[in-house]
Amino acid sequence: MSRRDLDEDDVRVRPNRRGSRPRSKDRPRHEDATIGFVTGVDRGRYTTLVDQGGSDERIVLAMKARELGRKGIIVGDRVALVGDLGGGPDALARIVRIEPRASVLRRSADDTDPVERGIVANVDQLVVVAALADPPPRPRLIDRCLVAAYDAELDPLLVLTKSDLVDPSDFVGQYAPLEVPYVVTSDRGAQFDGLENVRALLAGRVSVLVGHSGVGKSTLVNALVPTADRATGAVNDVTGRGRHTSTSAVALRLPGGGWVIDTPGIRSFGLAHVDPQRIIEHFPDLEPGTAECPRGCTHDEEECALDAWVASGAAGPAGPARLDSLRRLLRTRTAQQGD
Image (cartoon, rainbow, N blue to C red):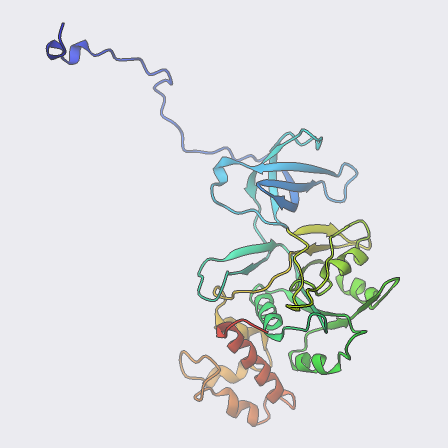
């Protein structure tokens, strides 16, 4: 028989081995899933803590379930786990759900990148670690971190390290109008001045530490959590910049209660995701003065009503300094990043 003599009746039809029942789009709810706390992320594997504070507390390694798709999981997330929750070396659970987040600290690659990248979730305090010298402080980067904290509705805290090298008074004075709480520390080998003040401000809270490389962030974490064993590095004598030592974020339990999340050193902090209009909300002493501002006012232009309102004394004696600080942060949102 030649091929020309074949017709559709000669075609062999194979039966459908998968059955005729249509595939359901409904996914299991996993209502009996166990809730865990993500303490670390490493190449698609998530270290989670199950039964926080309980007698059966254990570390469970997990992977993301396929149904989560492109949803990102970050340190600090509370997630629903199913599968092998034994916590043994060969156990691997599945993350099937991300619980609602109370807060998310985000940044973008730069001020033109519309893509937000979550850094940590469910924290309530952003600790900006900055060295007073070696390497020198970078006020613009610090300002950007403060803007990100205000946008995420986190309480900011400024920790200044290496005060044994430089008098901190002048630098602290730059942030006095912002009323950001701060702690001055110095590491002198066996003695770590200011450590107890830092402990007191972190106790009972979930805090994330950010700062550029070489400022002593990992050294501070090792002092706060002796079992952390975070890698530390020296500052490059030529560039004046620190070398990246921490390569991923990790959550560590503080001995006195609370959590601290150490993050890799940063050299930029994009704020493309931040609405400049939200920054004014974190200046409640100035916000009433915006009532007479023209529509669409950026609060950093000649027509802004804040100038006359502050000049009238309505914002109190600290009004002019507070207005300068507000506008410094507003300009930070759109200015080039740098020192």
